[in-house]
Length: 252
Image (cartoon, rainbow, N blue to C red):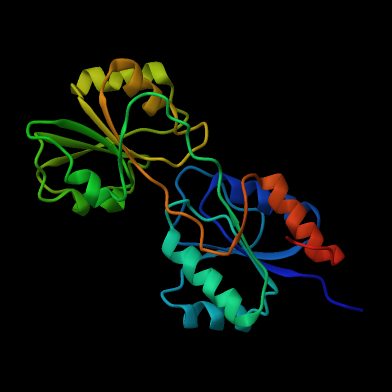
């Protein structure tokens, strides 16, 4: 009897939790890895560990050691380095790979676009009061800071990060609302919002608030999926892909 698929789930998104729950309910053999501990979600429904590959060789060795037969990449949309490493490793080993990427926001209001946090930082004007939703690990990308003050959103008050003198953490827990974001921006006298275009509903209120208030918005483009990779936009499509591995159907 042939053994069923054994899937490596790269987690780091809300979609990963939906996929993990579905695989667990269907008794699909899976294990998840996360680049960092999550702050906004509960535990995954499949066994997991904090681990990320630094090279293609490391990923290939990990896949071989655990006898994975496929990689389902539902990691954070901006963890493009891990996605590329995983895709290259699966290509080397001849394993199926799928990237899950939710649609980015369709922004109708005028915004300025940047390719990275560092590029967005160079666009900040003197004396600007900036609210940044780009992740706590990006603060160094804003130095040297040209504005008056940088307010950096953090969603876990327990994980306090030492910040440079120009920056201040603003703690909050989702779900956020447009009204609450508008009130926060007024209280902090924000004139510029820097954010990553991650897509999805939970992170959208700050963008809608800034656009409604006429603030300057700098949106950082999400990296593309690895060239040649299969991509799905929603968890149910990814779960169907898993089912094709189980039944032996086509994954294309």
